Structures are given as C-alpha cells and as structure tokens.
Image (cartoon, rainbow, N blue to C red):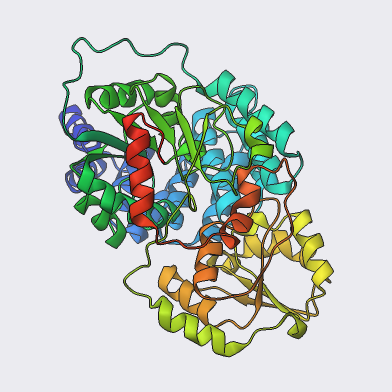
Length: 510
C-alpha cells in the first residue's frame, strides 16, 4: 500500500522545520507503506544522519539500487562519512558522484562544492579544487573564477598587483550588489552608547575568535556589541564572545538581501566584518551598504575585498605598508600596534610552555625543521625555500597529514627535500599547542601564503622561525608572519579597543 500523502506531507513539514526526529518517524512509516521507494529511503537516510545514526544512514543509502537515484545516494553517503570524520572515504564518494554522467547537475554541483572544499582545506590541493569548478564553468562562472583565483593565491602564480586587480575585478563582477539599500524610513535615534555590529561565520575557536576576543571585551564596556553569526557553533570561545554581546543574531540562513535588511534594521552606528573572502554572501550584503560606517577586520583578510563599501581596512603598518597601499580599494586604517591581539585558551599555559622551549636551545645547526600550516600552503615557493635550508629532518605537523589524499598529493613534491620526513598529527587545538611546545625544531614560514595565527602561537612559545623576506608589493597574506615577528606584543587589548571605538565613532584615533 503506497504511503499516504498526509504522512508524506507531515514528514516534509517536519523536515523543513528541522524536526529531524519527528521527520524520521514519519518517513519510516511512509517507507513501511511503500517498501523500496528510493526517494523515501534517501529522505529517511538524511533524517538518520541528522539524528546521529550514521550506521543506519549508510545502510539505507546502500539499499538504493535505482540508477536514477545513484548520484543522490552517493552524496548522502559521502556526507555521512564526512560527518564521521572519514574524509578519505567521503572524498572518494564525492568523486564518484562528480564523475557519474547520470548524476543530476544540481547534485553534481553540491558534490563539487564540498569536494573542492575538502581539496583546499583538508588535502592541500588548491589546483584540484579549481579544476573541479572548471568542469562546470559554463553554469557556474563565478565559482570557477573564484576557485582559480584562490589556487593562484596559494600557489603563487600571480604577483601582488596582478592578483589584487584580479580579485577586485571578480568582486565587482560577481559579488557587488547592483544597487545599495534604500534609506530607512525613520532616522536612527541618537544614543549615548554606540551600537557596533560584528559579522562573521567564525564566532568560535577559530583564528577570528582568538584574534578579536581580547579587544572586544574592553570595547563592550564602552559600546553595545551586536553579533551576527553566519555559522553558529558552541565552544568556550563562542561562550566568551556571547558574554560580551548586547545581542546575538543567528543569520546563518539569510541570503544577501535578507542579511542586508537584518543589518539595516539593527540601526547600527558601525559594522565590522570579520568574514571577508570566507563569506561571499555577507560581502554581497555589505556592498548594499546596510550601515553607514563599515569596516573590514580579520577573517578572510588576505587582501582587498575589491569593494567600495568600506570606510576602512583595519590593519597595521607592517601588514600593509605605504608601498602596498594602492593594492586595496578600501581606505587603509592602521592600528598603532599589531592589528590583532591574542587570547590564550584556558586549557594551555603559555608561560610554562615558553620556559620549556627556552630550555630546548634549538639551533638551525641541528638542521631539524618543521612545517606547521594548512598543507595547501606548501607551494613550489615554499619547497624551494625549504631546500635552501638543507633539512636533516623535516617535521610535518598538522592533523590533515593523517589523510591519504593529503599525503598522496604532496609526498611526490617533498621527495628529496629532506634526509627524513616525520608526520605529527595532533587532534584538537590543545594537543596541537602541546605538540608545538614539545617540538625541538626551527619552524619554517610558508610562501606565498604566510602563517598567521600559527606564527603568533609559535612566538608566544618562544620557537625560532625562518621566514623569507617579502617584496615591497606583497599583499597582506604574504606578510602575516613577518609582520607578527616584528610586533612588540599581542595583549594590547585596551589600546586596540580604544582605536576601534574611535573609528566606529567616525573619528581618527590618536
């Protein structure tokens, strides 16, 4: 007996409301009434995945034999494996979905998008990520061009000025909205305390969180902070940020137009974006100018956004010197100290760790070196620099080296670079910091994409760093480590908060 339309309608309502447990029960009843239905089976698999039953989700996907549903079954299988941390197996499933000519375009695009993200952020293969989108360039030209630009950035295929021009042209063609929002019907009321918005997909234990929390705490004593969260997650750092928030808005489902309206309706005096190139939907929303004063700071701040909607690109004199200022469409505003601070996590003692490091007496004469970055940063330029150091032992430190896709891609390029290579694959930030603390090696900066947060943590651990010099026209992502090496401190929370407040008021800080 076929499943009743009432049961299916109720299941769809529960699914759309993300009531996964109820939806699972209803789809199970529908499948019992229509055994073998591939559509209902796959909907039930999604519900099983969403309720944490990966084993059942895989069983249901494997039970689908209809070739018309093979592509969709493959992508649900891949998502299940990905959720379980089996990224190599997940990538293989996404790949089969991409290569299957019977996979519908919509499903294929979803598989390409996720697989490209894995290639770039887990397997260190930006060229493969770009190639995936190149295969669908006719239907998704913006994605294809963006992937090529990102690959060029990581691999160093274009110098600073050329890359800045290319990103700017891309932003103006594909990201900028055609027109700004209309003015609000009523003027914003005058207040004694400023209302400052903070927009990002990274309000948790990410570089954005570690590098902004220190200044946001004292800033919250002088202004009301409104957080707009594009990817909600809960951990110790997100809880610390929520503690300084006047209000917190989940805007993870908003498209650009809805996000722009939400920001406008918040009647903000100033808005600070901490997403940048990691959140193109948010950049489109900001290009509509929902707030009169908008600033770009941290988060996806590798180079200019290419947009004209910001009153300031918040940086420092080392990250964007006068010689590179023309490479940015935004007005450059420089902090007196480093453009970021660092908040140590509660689970790690940097003072004790620094004392341990100082006792290790690391010397380049030992010829023990370490690379500790996203493997995507191990470019031909990085490898050439490593070779000049003639390592006796090269340590590759990152959790992503445990994946066979990472090793199979990069090991051939590492052949002969060092007498021996050793992998260290810490899990989680605490174990990562402990590994850095206990590693007696000289750490190598990557090129052209330089170390950022990692460089700061290595400095606080008193670890030696070898970093090649940057050209006068180098972009910000090429200068991160060098800029941090010359910084005096990373706990200047009060002074940074004071400068942020002045800029948000429309005043030049002194």
